[in-house]
Image 1: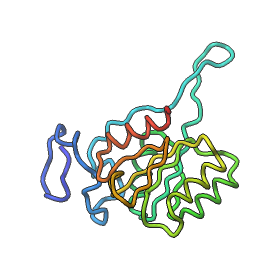
Image 2 (image 1 turned 30 degrees about the vertical axis):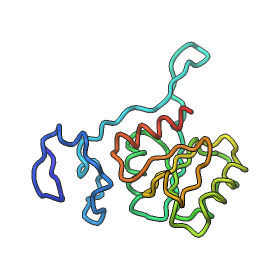
Image 3 (image 1 turned 180 degrees about the vertical axis):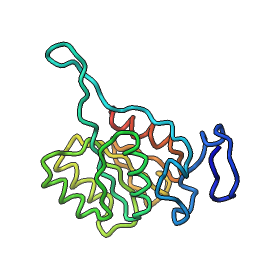
Image 4 (image 1 turned 45 degrees about the vertical axis):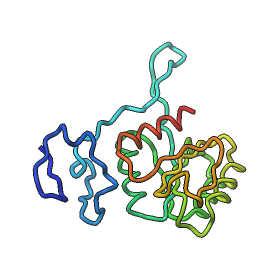
Length: 179
């Protein structure tokens, strides 16, 4: 049994499967995300291939840049992604993320970003990122709908609308990395 911190009640394991983590007030959440959110069904995303001797070896975990102006969301995404086996670098400022992308020799395998809330508009940030790393997969996680008039559709960019479940977030991350 786990504890539902919002209703202060014990919750059977089966009810945690569809638990929407974005509905929780992050100020009440314990630092240990797995204790609060229940048993996250983690999948091992470590890739394997054959070495020269024909044996199996694990490759480096995929690297993900997470860019959101809300530190509680970047913390949440980091907890989920690192628990799943990804390497995560967090930015709460788009300009700093773009500078890191330009100067960092090890490029990310995926960029997760929000759409609103920064000084640098999303379209300019995306253009800047793609000018540095043209094949960079991008996942936009936003509270606005992709049908909102403020949203400018951009080809080949994945989109997930907040709020979302851990499972749907993990599925979008996997799909973006596989694309």
